[in-house]
Structures are given as structure tokens and as C-alpha cells.
Picture 1 (spheres, rainbow, N blue to C red):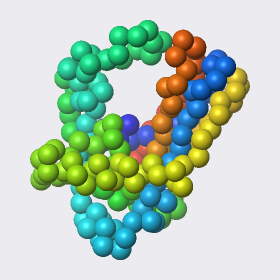
Picture 2 (picture 1 turned 45 degrees about the horizontal axis):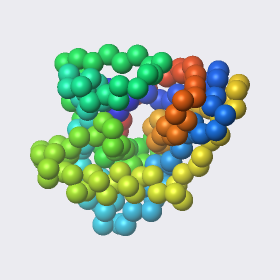
Picture 3 (picture 1 turned 135 degrees about the horizontal axis):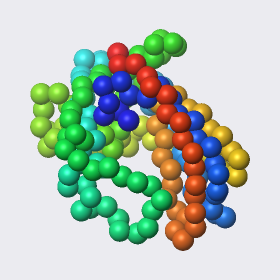
Picture 4 (picture 1 turned 180 degrees about the vertical axis):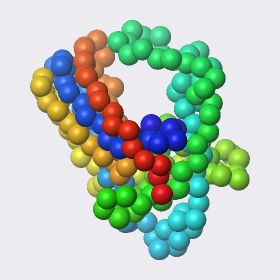
Length: 180
């Protein structure tokens, strides 16, 4: 939810129904993603701002690109998804004081004062770097499982590998602060 002015602090997910196999969630530490960058990359990124927007998944053209297979999720598409928010590429956690990488492949569209085309090579590198296996853990859901994560320093990815089976989750998202 980095497309919001005040992105979420964290999320809690409760598994009501899980598939027989698949449907795990991958969590990637953005502290580790930052810590393993070279000093030169840290220095360059430390002064950069990224532009975040929900237009790709929720914008007016997104409905046409949506997979037509049945889903229990309800999506709201519209022009408000085209709003852009500026956030630092390197975020400092307000409680721990630690720095983390703060870009993602879903909502980070470009760097401030750059085009999407100019931004693409570095963003692609950062998106791949952010989810390297050594920064990641895999959570296997069971009925009744609960996961709570800090969206300020963790990326999550639900693996869509359970075609034909149901995965029913209840989610609570906690409002956060403006990234610094």
C-alpha cells in the first residue's frame, strides 16, 4: 500500500480456509536488502525519491488486463488510483532507526524527476534485489494460522499456485505514518 500518503504500518492475516497444497506467503526483509547494498548504491539511493501509484493494479485500464478467472476478491477500479505519492527510496523505521529499501514492483512506478523508461533499469535491479532468497522466508498456511508483519520493512508476496482450490483469508491493515 505504498501508493498511500500514509502507507500501512503492518498487516494481520488470519487463515480461514487454505488449499491442500500451495498458497504460501513469501516475506522479504527490506532491512537485509538495504544492508547488503554497496556503499556507493546506498549513497546514491539515500538522496532519491520514488513515485508510487496504484494505477497499474487498480487504474482505469487495469480492469481490462485482469485475469478473468473467478476470484473471491473484489477490486475497485477508477481514476483515483492514478494519484501519485512521493516516498524516500531508503526509509528509516521510526521505532528501530534502521534503514530499509522502500520500493516495490507493484506500486513504485518511477523516480522523482525521471521518466518511467529512465527509471526502469535501476528499479528492475532493486525489485529483484529486494526479494533475493537469502532475505526471504516462506510461511506455510494452516487453517487458523495468523501472520503479523511490519509493512515498513518487509515485503510480502502471496504465491498464486493453488489453482482450483480455495484460499480464504481475513486481513486487518493498520494505518502507518508518512515514510521518512
